[in-house]
Length: 505
Image 1 (tube, rainbow, N blue to C red):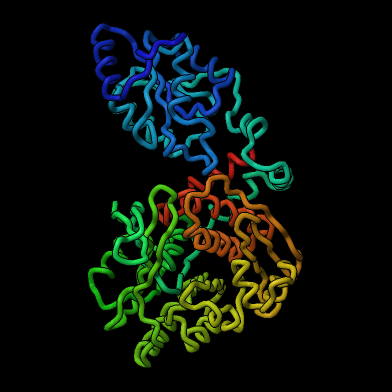
Image 2 (image 1 turned 90 degrees about the horizontal axis):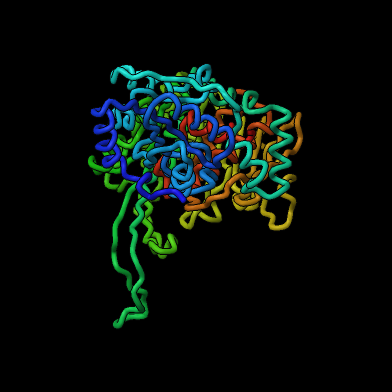
């Protein structure tokens, strides 16, 4: 039976190790996720313990396990408990940061032990950890022994996916593997991308329900907190900025300088805002009142001006497009149907974009009259299934047939229909139809999933990726987006890489 004295907060552990060092004892630290403790881990820890007098193991907390939304399989408390049960381990603590860098500085081990597989796989984290250790005067040791993988064992024994999804991943892995898929997005940095569309300020007001009001037949709620996210075209630009070296954002803002300043503060460093200011109008804002326990919206309303753009604003938009389009390799239109994309702007985009991606979205304010049919052409188009059915005026027709028809109508080399929990259906004139299952196992909030899917698949389409790769990466991006509240975290190269690698282990 293990002793609970092995488990302690980092601050307390730092004091214990300081006393151990003062007593001349050699401290060895190991660090990792340890999601499924296996014989490879045990041998690695046993050998690490022999390199010193005190072995301490720090555990990556749940919120920083960067292997896809379906991981970790076991929560941090159970992972720490399993490690503390080993006789060779003296102390266990759960880390408070994404990597071991700050943890090393706090605990100051004499030796930092890593598995031999990390000697040649020098990730950015390993490089930063080595630098931190060097500043402390410590050493790093790479331990040779049986190499295994928690991810591989979890995929084989405790897969979170249905059997048909596991078969799909096995077949795709045999065809490409992570090494044949990731370069399509990881080598996109030379691309210059321009996002055109309405940016939406997303506000979540969290509350708890009380009872029906005593004075009127309405629901009464108690305010708890609120938060804001960058949505719409701004969110798409932030996703692209994780993969492209240069991203432009041509979008509409209202007359309030503070809102425009907040919008710009939320953009990644390599996003250049090209703002079109509309006087006497608010910046488009969608506010939701959400019941906190169930994380469900109770009421949604919009702050917006949907009057057509003034003639002067339309001319200014045309000039901005004429100046910007020649400077970008890829143009992504995120058209939410709220007055920015006028007929003149659409004509300029279709005539001047080198590679044009188009996505049109319907909502409560434009349902029934906003569709992709406003665009005469696109190189790549992606629509949610409900938007595809509105465009084709069909409730019953097969989704694949409809996406092929839209692609042919727009002369697109790629078209993909997003189907939520049923994955997606893609079409290319040479490859025909391809279906790919959804990869989400943790759905916290569906908001922003389309933006993530749009950004990643637009990159793939612009670079000529195979249709099956494009659909797969879009579903990976969507799975990451629905695993967080709102649009808190834009996609990043490292998180996407680890997610894909984990799926194929």
